[in-house]
Image (tube, rainbow, N blue to C red; front, side, top):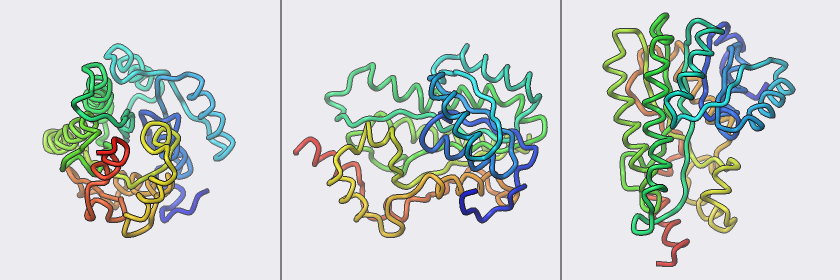
Length: 272
């Protein structure tokens, strides 16, 4: 088990659904929940990656997971996954809305399809999955964690599609926290620091010099690990956070207090 401040059995018998769970932070979240006793279901668009993730998690933890191909942009696909969960488990305790998409592009060059691709995954997908999971979550009460970014409450130059979507997710988080409190469902957001997952490297941070400059701008902790971010999600879903709802846990090492990293990165990339 990775170093953890939580008891191994903290989530014993809890049912956890993680979108975008086959790679990156989603895979790390799945591992951490498994290591703390939970039953885990992951979904993403790629069957091969899901199968590899399942095998890797079995190797690392000795535990099996459930998985299914799902596209958060398609209502019927989400229906199929949630119906599967209902048939297997009958209820759900935790939902982590982690599926995301992003790439650098100034708004003046951003196509309608480019805008829609990101907004439909991040904002519409979070709405779609949360609403479909609601009947399962309200049976026993539960917890939702939405993964956002530290530009959700500020400007998002060169990633405007993602910024608008993440800002919408932040508002949706607080709205659902109020509307679903009567069902004993807590809804929070987690804002990770810079984590160099495969997707981040491929779509945002390919230049090592930029990565180094970015790391130097983070006051505490530097580039974060998936395991560190997983601990934040575990906390938000734990009994210790039982009175926390509608909040954002910012775990970016103070980077958002320094300045807007995407403004500086974008200017370098586009040589303005």
